Amino acid sequence: MIGTTLDKYEVLQKVGEGGMATVYLGRHNTLNRDVAIKVLHPHLSSSTRNRKRFAREARAIEHLHHDNILEIFDYSGVDAHECYIITEFVQGQTLSDILRERGRLPSEVASIMGLHLARALAYAHQEGILHRDLKPDNVMVRWDGTVKLMDFGIARFLDESQVTMTGALVGSPAFMSPEQAREQPLDGRSDLFSLGTMLFYLVTGHLPFSGSNPSLILKNVIESNRPVVSELAPTMSAGMADLIERLMANNPDDRHKNADDVASAMEAVLAEANVEPEDSRWHLRGYLEDADAFENRLDDHLRQILIVRGKQHLEAGDHLAALRLFNRLLSMDEDNEEVLDLVQGLHGEPRPIARQGAWAGLIVALGLLGATAFAASKWGDPTEIPPPVPAAVVAPTPVAPEPIAVVAPEPMPVVEPAEPEPQPAPLPPGTVVGRRIMPAPTPVVEEPEDTDRVAAMGKVRFRAGELIGTLIIDDTRVGTTRDIAKAPIDLTVGEHTIEVKGERVLDWEKTIFVADGEIQTVRIDLEPRPAMLNFPRKDYVGDCGVFLDNNMQGSLDSLGYRLLIKEPREKFTVRVACDNGVQHEKKYQHITDGEDFPPPTV
Image (tube, rainbow, N blue to C red):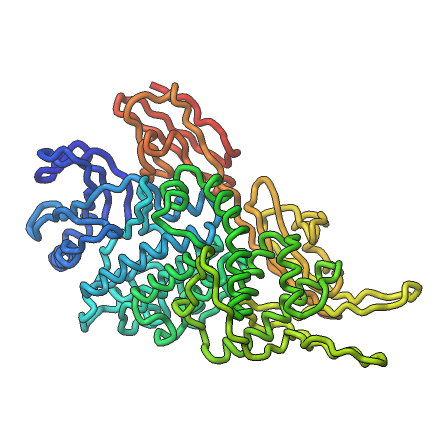
């Protein structure tokens, strides 16, 4: 195919392959512009039915013209020898590529991407088209920061009444909606569920639904067996966590009504953080150019804006909104003295020296303030977040709010000592606070210094796979994952941070709560750390393609003379073939990060 011409399009090189078609880089001969050529696989194009379906889908989406949707320029007729679609060629990275490099994305970065995708879906749905296969592989971020939703190849008209079983299950199980997994009629809310699943993946680095085979994954999707997003990403925006949870509601009626509502909710989340997507500081182009610098800049910005926004909510009498922001800030900076003082000030009492007391106060305050708000609405509604108060505007004196249980009344003068005022009862483990499941605070009991005390203990059993890393509990190294799998470990009652680090595995972290006398099992799912294979520029001259296990990965130039190996401990084969006849192939048992590919043989 390479070197041939399809009508007026010259086929230059293969850039990718999917289950339905192969994608090539091409050039329009008269306009002299690069295009992408999507050619239907021969075994599919041999069927007249498939050819008609391919043409029908091309016609369905050829009129979609939106900044965030891959544009179609042309397509072959039903009777053409090769069935193909001509689209714009996007130079950039897929979200899968970005995730492999970064592990997880800051929630504001994911919110900007989600805003663009919600706008794209709103436009497509208004035109009567579902995407049906929304996933990171089908989203690209162009070099200039433009988000592009691609591959409507399995799109269907919203009013199509008959869909075969094969057609109904086309898509990626891990990103399907429950109704799609059940082969039920679909509407735009199915795409919204997939969007929520993808956002979950972006902010946590983990798929919400997993399983050893597609059937088990679909079972977990249908039964909504997944963790709460904020448990895996405690530093994320609370508004974004609420939004993702609502998008991923099992019942479509509990989700947003349409993609326009989702876009409005995304805008509210970004406004709370004072992040404007078109601002040069927060434009996605800057993230692509230097993600580390972008994240450091965002982190410094959030440390300032969260406390400003929190104080604004306090002045307006909205203590719950303030505490949600303070909770996020303490997740980022647990020693922030100003926030700890503000939190304890809500109780009308000085902040204790022990940090645990401050966190307990925050948890109790969130629980008492949040109970009423979340009882009124199952999911909450991010679109109803009050607009931020401009910093330059002096707010009018707020109307005195209704008494709140956590705000202690001013103490009355007493002549004789009074009985101590009863404190709010601690929340039982598993209580839902905001969208996070929080443990109950451990009460601090004053005892005489000379009293012997036995700490309450629980046991934790760890289960890990074959990959080995160093286990760290509360910043203390306790051994490797292989060592600790032999017997349970005794831990004091309370909250503990479990981490696993290693040169060959991705960092893993989880917070657990140990109860007195409890024996619990914690499963540690480690993933191998990807490794980069380098291709010295001096060894390869000209146009050279890179193949991984016979699958084209791209040209050396487009790859930056590097190839990311997701499973560096597994067997694989790398081959380089250049247009000047130079080629080389090597079989690997494993590689180390930064290893150089050997020089070619002529």
